[in-house]
Image 1 (cartoon, rainbow, N blue to C red):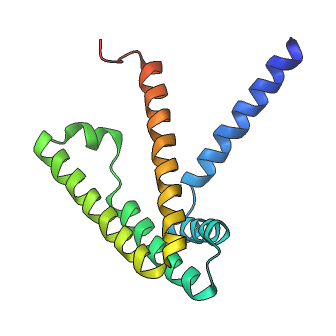
Image 2: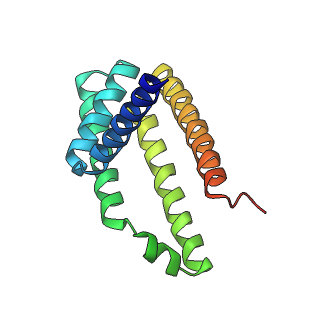
Image 3: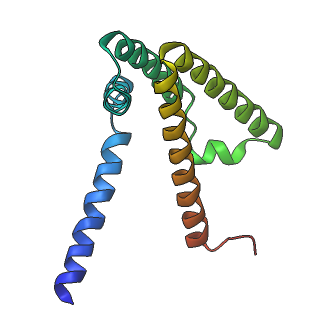
Length: 138
């Protein structure tokens, strides 16, 4: 039992550190890694990979520039939050359109599946986090 607890503790520390490392990366590093993962998943050619990396670099720089702290987010009015969400959705639509122009039909279909899986995974994680905080709607 003691060994199991030690193993769980080591795994928890490892996962936490891996997540922290991604946050500490520069936009260039994140774009490079993301484009390489996409290349492996979708079998992109060199031209497509370069275009995707450029797109991801723009996205990463934009995210870094517009990142708000928890305190700043708390100070936003509901109208400001709605405008921010609208802006984020517009950017996602633009990225999706650009990806459609870069990828062929088969690659784009696989890209859509990947994005749907990621969205499901994020929703699942958000539900778990919400439950852990103890404010699950009550």
